[in-house]
Image (cartoon, rainbow, N blue to C red; front, side, top):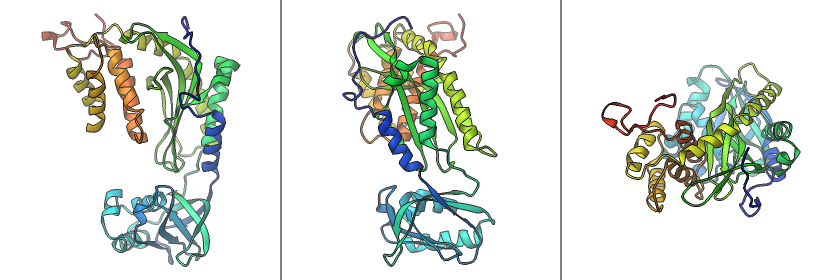
Length: 386
């Protein structure tokens, strides 16, 4: 890297998590027991009580599953929803119908409707049965073949790779972006390395220091594939951009082991870190691509190619319209990334915005200014050559 920010970066002031704090939280959610059962088994029974869908996602809900051996497990709302989804009832339908009707539907599916299949409950902590006596708490439900990967171990693998690839100072400076999500269905964390930084010049708001990092997404219950991506992070605004050009998607769980997953994650993180300079260069190029009179058309095209919700579109448009001076593709990428910083933004929304900003960087800011017939101002393909 040729340029570095002369300003020190205070991770605490920026609201970032410490590595130790993130590891502790991940390790807590990793501590899972399990109980397996088969559909179509005699004695299998679920009960959804009044208000089950009104509890916190990871809190114990008035919902219980009794297994054929007689053991009773209280379910968190998330586990209760997952069990309903296994029974072919989508989440909106589960919350719409009365609990007694949902109970009948799910019991029918588990006892008769579904093929004979091994299922698993993931357990953590203590709940209470319908009589108030202590019983195990099920925090997730998944296929019987799913073996959870340790999110804390994935974090450590990324940190070890950073240390090997970028050095001790880089690894020691690492922090975790506060856009951090961890439940049994989805975990995503973004390790940022403040000393692996470069100043982006000509942004219209002074020089802007950005650093690089690694983003990891995982699902303890196997709902989504494990992915590793590069990550650009603004040291000035905490905006984040997924490096979509450096993304190792989809570790194949079937027939694999946790150790194989950790080895894959190490290789993926090493490959991601190798693209750091290209990512910084791609971001810098955007500052020279002006879109002042065309930003609405460009954003409209980007939104069509990488759909986001209407509310998110309005967030981005409001930011862009408030910016002074000539607008560039850098401004569009920055506005998209900043929209993900707002409080109560879900992990899906954060991911959508980070990916969209990443597509802007990957696309490189090129627009048709006459190269194509009628000079339509469409974004040029990433492999376009004049």
